[in-house]
Image 1 (cartoon, rainbow, N blue to C red):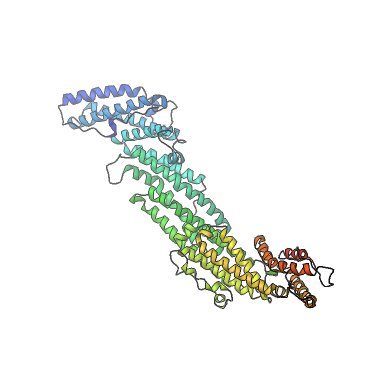
Image 2 (tube, helix red, strand yellow; image 1 turned 45 degrees about the vertical axis):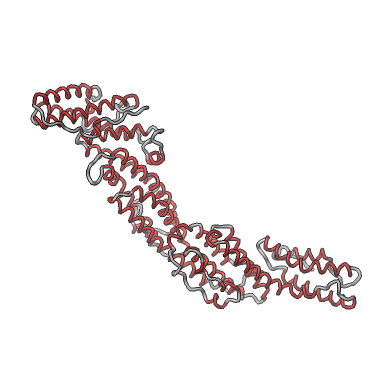
Length: 575
């Protein structure tokens, strides 16, 4: 369908100087006669009934009659010009009164046509279609052009209020229905504050979806539609497009921000931080759209509500992070983890921080300085580990510093718990296991990006240091007692007895210790084997089993026993 360009009615014609009554009467008479003949082709008697709101299937602005619709608007533009001309010369003219009656009849018809086009094309004029469509390709371009031309004709003829009233009533209803369909509930702040957190958390998920669609699609489509239909329709300081859009959307938009401000008032506990961040992140992501859609001075309240919501939610998130750090510091379990495995505190805290890192954009906006870092626990200053060499304040951004600080608080607690073990070797294995778990979580999440490669490299060095200390304490006596090829025959038996005893004691002691990560477990076993097997093999070749009653192990036996280590109770064998 090739659209005709809007005719001259879009702007009122410039009136000529007053002329003599005869010409004016002739002009109004001819125009009324021509207009009346054309209007009667389309205006049936029921259209005159003010209470009728029916939408005829056959319409002047249907696809097959669109050319006639353009002609109808041209005729009305000429009639309006004749009314203005005659009004200047002979305002009491009977023909002028007849022309005005005819115009009223035509305007009532146009009202119904305006309503019909709006309603019958609703599925093409929904906000999602308007927000995403190409107006050169979609069918709603015809409908929008029809609406714009009808609106221009009614407004230039003095029927602006009638046109806008119809539009606002129908479009406001569409907005309200769409929000309701998306799950919007008319709850006051007081009502929401009385809800249990579990119920409010479910409502948060619904609000996130609602707000995203409302600001990205619903209000955006309405702004586009108002601009296209009512642009350049008013010369006042506040355009008709603006005032219409504001009356349709403003209150609905403001009501959406009751929810986030209520969420920000909830009791500040660590487990509430992620739903709160979901609300914050949703607003943060739609703020550019809000600024674009509600850019008028008359809609500044929407922009300010968005800013206020972000501010209050940010304060709430900061308070929850403080509470989370405090909960780490206050963790007071006094029982060592069996076999030196990963402490449940390490798992909980790192999973929590990994989820925090997924909100890095929001946290970057919330955490603006490093002054909010809480003091480190006393364990940091009493630590025998190398964790006190760190300074998270040197991290790149305040957000990265805050997350690095939380990890450091955790490592301080883990260092303190390592001192619950009576065996120093087991305490170092415990430290290595837990720090290695921290590194796995960092490397396999957004924390790698947040903390950076240097942070990871520095902590990998610490794992190596812990393992070196563990190996020295756990296997040092075994390695020292290892007989070599150069061992004299007279000393061989005694050396072998010492080695057998040292190896058996070490194995029995460590066989139930655990290294949960398979890769780290293999690295530890490979390191121990490399220090034992090669030296023992040379001795064994010189004194194989059978040559002495005390040669108990082949090199393969030793390798087998070492392979059984660090899998806990399920994998060990007896010597």
